[in-house]
Image (tube, rainbow, N blue to C red; front, side, top):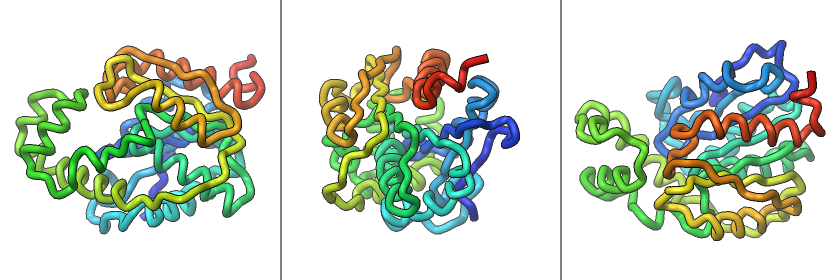
Length: 252
């Protein structure tokens, strides 16, 4: 099944914001963004197998498998400019996708936005996919952003934990290889109370992946500040998308 979910009316779109969710997340996290961003900025998202509308599909074998599928799915969007947005594990996949698109099509995204992601600090090194349910729940509680009533719901955990384990395995299997830095701007978005990401280290990590480093942006909230501070995050996304096309997106 196709990994791409398109949340905007295609005929209104001048450029695409292509979103990659955090570990354990689904493409529907970004569905309501289509009505909250400028009309010309279309919203689409990529979804790993085994969750959401791809429930029942086999898990991705690793990041290379996931990114290859994402590049296939994203191909129809490339007729218009594309900006990549990735949150936590999604930011790492967005980086690999940007390189895959460059290798396949000779073009990069207009910009990449990496939220709550510190490349030198691997989530898979902090919690094992084979950890007990109790340890995974404790880790999620430390991350913040998940209501306690969900973390104590057997039904919710029965849905979430297998997806989270699969995503942790994908992250753990990401090969480490040298790549030529991207030529597009890379923006780093940070949560001011994120317990899992050091802002200065994250900025250094991402600056090394681009020839066009941008100043970081900070928002109230923890590791899931993207949802906790959605209004300011969406305003920043609109500004950065507008800058990527020379101020033509928001111009009336």
